[in-house]
Length: 314
Ligand SMILES: Nc1nc2c(ncn2[C@@H]2O[C@H](COP(=O)(O)OP(=O)(O)O)[C@@H](O)[C@H]2O)c(=O)[nH]1
Ligand SMILES: [Mg+2]
Image (cartoon, rainbow, N blue to C red):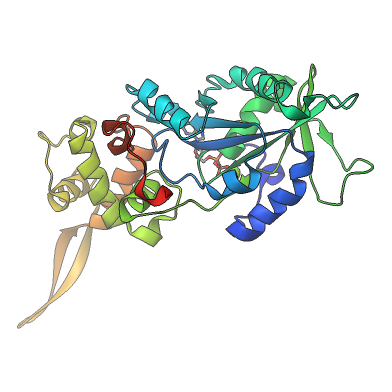
């Protein structure tokens, strides 16, 4: 929650966002794309690859603490096949693996075509990704790792740099490396209903667009399918259950989330006490997102069919 002011940014529509990024692209030597490690293959916006694809690119799969990464090698293999060659898993809350980023970025830039450019040995990185995957957290984490106490050294508009308002944060002395302090926000790519559900469950699209009752239902389905039964313990349910209404009812009762509802009968109004299903769904989803219900991997279908291309990629 630190320093919100410095890192506030608007969620810009895709086209103008991409345009903006394109115009500042000349200044950028490497792109760090952040995505949620629980959905390593779903929802990444491939448009930016076409638009920005010429740059050295590092995919940071963040929130590794929330992801079931037993099949990490297969995930990386699949991404490699899709042309994503550089992948680092991170946890920005604990600065895990953050130290690998600057050396990797340096290696990528220095092996790239732009390296032979004489005296201008100053590297500039841009962080991009869909909402809520941890872009700001990554920027803050990089600052913590590379600057004393997370204090940014900001560099204003330099002579010769176009008027675009880009503040830069120094993240490394040797080589001199800067990070743009405003991440590029991309719209997620939602190619089918299940992708939408995965993205919503991970919090990268707004809950009300899908509906919390539907997210809760999908989440229960996934937890059971992956035999991730932490929720049973967490809510004292006794046993696993695949009926969302009865799970929500019991969560509501356990959390004392009940409300009075007026019911009209032939003899007048009666107050009936009912479980508050939406409050229960809210708690179920929040608990999952904060890791209390265990680790999950949403993108397993791709991994079960090695070599299978996503239908919509053609
Ligand atoms: N568990 C976990 N949560 C994270 C991690 N990184 C970021 N978050 C949380 O994810 C939410 C979104 O992070 P933020 O940096 O604002 O995402 P942005 O919208 O991409 O800039 C915040 O509540 C962060 O605390 C991580 O590695 N693990
Ligand atoms: Mg942010």
